[in-house]
Image (cartoon, rainbow, N blue to C red):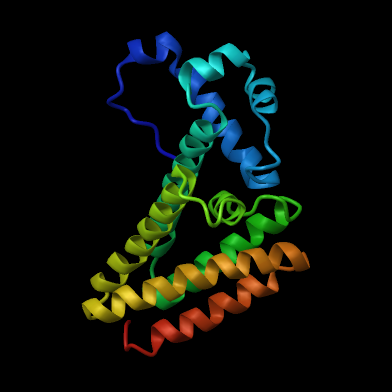
Length: 204
């Protein structure tokens, strides 16, 4: 995720670095072992922080840390989506390329680095928690990234919105399947079929 270049240096000097480490470490841990499997003590240890520091920055404890970590991951993936969809060849080729990139990254991680948003969302289903709300917001934001690309390619508003929902839903499901089967093919197949779907709308 791109850093906020407008943040004053004083904020970093008063603990921004420690907070950032806590957030990024938590995002990685949730990505690999889920929200339930990630403990506050493990977060502190791997971030090189004390428990007191964790609670200083996140008085709400583990849930508050998780919300910040999921938001971080969501923004990072939104940036990667924008970059991937901005490539040459039109939205159909861009969607297929994004799926292939996800497949390669997942394989290179040993099938461990899945989507932290999906992991946390599934573990907290049925709750009216801030985690559920931040996960829902992440999915909507990703859909909007795809929708904006499709609108820019000449899609009608309704088609752009619905196809964007299909794209994100399919990629999320394919990523889970790829992890379970330890194979790139679910994501690559999803990318090919999504590319064909997008192509049927007559986009370049």
